[in-house]
Amino acid sequence: MTDKERRELVEGPRKKPTPAADTLGKGTGSRAGTAGPKVTGTSRNTGKPSAKNTGTKSGKGTDSSVIMKRVIVIAVVAAIIGGFVLYSYFTSKVYKSAPGTVGNTAGNLYNGGLFCENGDRIYFSNPNDDYTLYSMNLQIDDFKKLYDDYARYINVDENYVFYTRMNNKKTNPTQSIFIFYSTGVFRLKKNGGSLQMISPDPCGSLLLYDNRLYYESYKDNALTLHRVDINKENDRKLFSDDTPVASVYGDKLYYSGNLSDQNIHYVNTSGNTAVAVETKAYLPIALDEGIFYISTENDYNIYLVDYEDKERKCIVNRPVTWYNITTDGKYVFYNCDKEDENGMYMLDREKNEETKIAEGNFKWINLAGGYCFYFDFFSEKVYAYDYVNKRLNAFIPPVKK
Image 1 (spheres, rainbow, N blue to C red):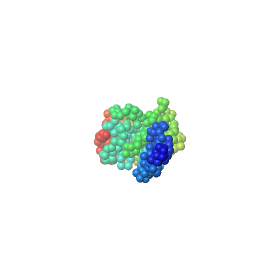
Image 2: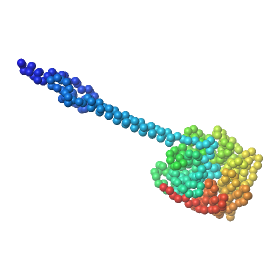
Image 3: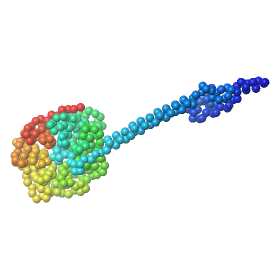
């Protein structure tokens, strides 16, 4: 027996190793020229797998667990993404209020829109906290801070608070200058969440009516009236005039012209304008019995005219600078600007009885919750007059964080 025959008998027949796949090589870091994995579990005599090599079954088990883990990870990721999509949908969805809803009274909006009654809450600008946005109950209690914005022209519906941000008026900014020294029209949930910007431009008066916002936009050294849906769509310029549009009656918005004339005008829901009453008027408030206004041609007395302009009558025979009226037309509040007669007054029209509430000069007369809130002209100290029980108190709301 030759040496070659003896060596083949001992070592058994050799098989050529199968080359490893490229991906496996790259994945395991095998060097070029290597003949593949070393086989150690083969019988020298038969070339068959030995009893020690049981890697086939354990390999299948490992693959199954890896697949299961991947399925679980994919399911978790899909659930997170789905939850985020649903959250984004419901937080970005804009809910409409009942058709014809008006956000605040004309009298309040003419006086800065600093108070607004809605349901069992009063939404207001807190004078003790740099006029930031708050709410309280009708008993002047349970104060809540909604947002740290200097808020004017507050309007409220079933779901949201709308207001004009005037942070350029803040005296004590506490956050970034890019947040606090800015203006615009904003929408906020009634719980103080999900703030959305409607317009970034400096804005004046704001009125919510029938799920649309009518706002004065100051741009290119001019004031223009715009109308936009509450979801920020369909923004449209209606006309140019330096006048607030705040009073709604019978699907028409009434206002007094300023740049063109001082007549009482209206703009309808189509955006068309027309003259309603030819007179020299200021701050018209349209109610069931007619349009109240300050007559600039009659010593700034308060007048009432019917919608057909058949009758005009004087309601308050005093020179008036600021006024407001309850929605039923029963009580009229006004600041008289006349030497020796300066003061805050109330007229009970049913009793034809005038009450002098306080002596001095006052402004920003707002009505909410059975109270007349008004401000001292110089110090801006606030008073709350219970006009049913005729009780006067200082209004000192707390500061909340």
